[in-house]
Image (cartoon, rainbow, N blue to C red; front, side, top):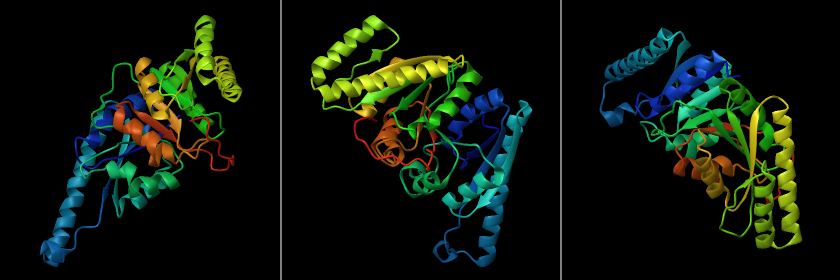
Length: 322
């Protein structure tokens, strides 16, 4: 799995909210954790009214303070028998983080969605756009107020849309589920004009028939019915494939708005991790830059694992499913 985890920090408690999650993952996966912090270019001395010598002293003090801070976390992890190191970075946040990912051969970046400097921008602004467009490894995102439970990574929710791109996340989910002996819930959402969300447990034939009947009655049109049937079979195929590998898997078919549906089922199954790709059938730059991911981050406190989709896959956009 993730043998090298890069953890960008900024010295704030909000940014440190990711650390219990990293600690848990490192213990399960025997990963090496790299604590890093970016020392960005200082404000011009003319604005601060500082002499050159004072500015040099300020930079030196900043480096020393940052090194001591990161070393403190490294020591805490090492005291627990975990492998850890530190990496000080200089420059602009996006470029520095991308450099660190390549330099350390990072397999997972783990960080909170907001830190000292209002790092909502890390995910909603220029930093997010730069990192996510160019990084080639998964990112684990945790909101500052999210606290890991004793059942961390025991229930994993995996939204799929029927595309090869969206399936890029599955090998990562397999690995995590194996490490934690977790239960996987595969979900596919059929987008319709209806506001109501229907949950279908496809493992139970009776319930499935009842829900399907409701779906058919509401949707009415043959084309919509065929989409539901195709989505149902798609989920069942993946369920069998993963179960054949010894994994505990359930499937859910829902219809409605993607954000509402994902959040609703995450609450119903008490998912402690939502895992999805950064781009799916519908051009899901939206998964990060638009409504879906930002909606999940804004409205759910559940950790989000985002895996870059295979850029080599070229599919025509279809707007029927999430």
